[in-house]
Image (cartoon, rainbow, N blue to C red; front, side):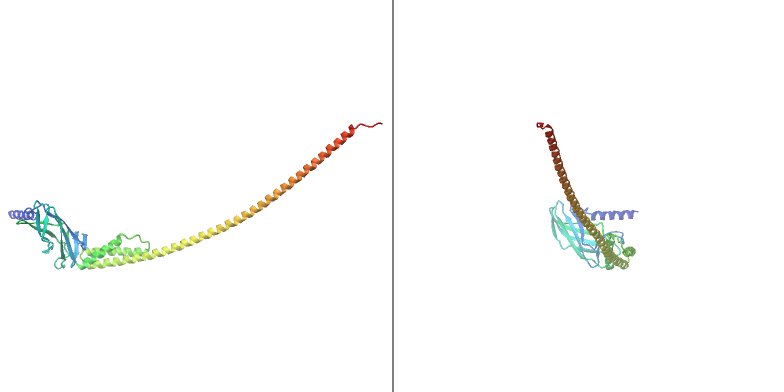
Length: 322
């Protein structure tokens, strides 16, 4: 029991020292960022969030350092990252004098080792160190990142790249109306699921093959749907043209009928005008006859009055001697 307590105390002391108890704690590693990794995010094979680079590629780690210590300036003598495959990688931007309240980024570039050195079947831990001097003293800061570093093998990287492309296409595909396209799409989704099972077992080449098959099936489905849509568009266009032609024919017939009706109406109007003219002539003739009748009536009345006058004169005329 005493041995356990001693070991625990030693480990605690080491942890406290590594976190800056014996070095200035006011100045620190403020940030870090991996530049353009091959993949960053959750990986189902490892069951955690990772940052991954492909073996043989160039990795870049940017480290932000801030000095808010009371000492006017410090000299950064080393900025490095240590990995659990027992390798250190160092920035070439040192030594660097970091002024009071100054913030500076340091870049570390290194070639990602082979999977024989850094095994791709496990996530790797790493630690960032910044060493510095002030006056005649030395110190350092360190930081354990929350995420793990992964070295992808060639097959694993190819599989992940194919998987991301397949998922992107399947996630945003519109609805397929073609039966053949829907069948191909269903097979592509099946290949994605099968490939996933191989990937989480670590059979990356087999997973890649299934996902490549899924991509090929998806592209075929998209082509089938495009051809189907093109044919349907042409049929719809032909149907619309037929319907438009039929409506145009109906409109032309209606226009012809309307023009015939208009001509018939014009003829009726002409006939009505002729009838009106004839009626007006009849009225004028009747008026002339009526006026003539009035004239004869006046003449007759004049003769009657004249006859009466002659008769009255004859009656009243004095008789001569008997």
